[in-house]
Image (cartoon, rainbow, N blue to C red):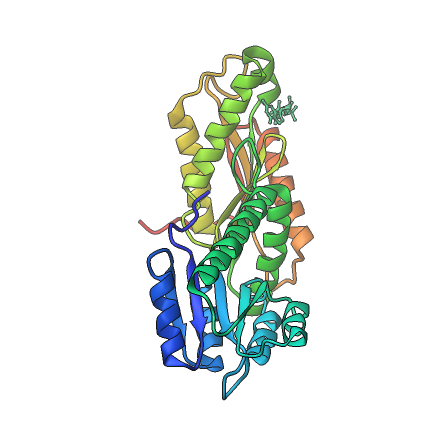
Length: 309
Ligand SMILES: Nc1nc2c(ncn2[C@@H]2O[C@H](COP(=O)(O)OP(=O)(O)OP(=O)(O)O)[C@@H](O)[C@H]2O)c(=O)[nH]1
């Protein structure tokens, strides 16, 4: 998993001296962002997705409570860890902050060593949470997204397509005669072959919104938002070509002497009101047709216009 080397901390405080002291303290270990009021804090939080916000409670235009409320109300910033820094040091102020879901509460005047230790502790928690989230979304064998992750992303992308009217393409890839491969070469070799196919698929998911996931068993699903039929077919052809290039010998296959894949694909019929389930069913039936027709091929709908040279 690629975690950024330096975690990002946003310091939101209307007092320039406080901002400077905290920034100097944190700069050696973290990427530091600064905001001098609540509005800037919200803007920087949305734009830079910091790992932690040190948030002054008492600010003139918008106090820390309101900033926190708005952070939590926006899905993009809702999960950012926040530490309140406040001149209010009554226990009920601290309790209020903690009840609102801040990770910690530091009273002013603060002690530099304690601030550093608390920041380090909470950033460690953030790292661990990210790691767990990552593990919950990834298939252990292929390191592709798992089925759960795919289901979530597909539902969101389908909704997005309804809103923006952009094309959405979906494909399913299935290794040919994989049972025979396992029987002939053994399960560990089967696992290696599956990983090789997954690598080929992942390598061709080049746009940020593209997603290759393990759908189940030896079946992979490729989600390509904002991609029309001709472009998506090209991607799947490139993946199949790469699998062929890897030249994994499959002596027990009825399709070819090498390991091959079959694929079914479709591009959403948005104008006809096709549902997410209907698109998936179409893709599945095209995969079935590809298998029926002899395997080692792609069946796509609609038949895309020949790609531009
Ligand atoms: N090694 C390995 N095999 C798996 C894994 N997941 C599923 N399989 C095997 O994949 C095989 C799928 O068999 P079938 O559904 O009959 O498909 P197939 O033999 O590929 O036949 P066609 O798809 O019709 O070409 C089964 O033998 C499963 O045990 C896995 O993670 N590792």
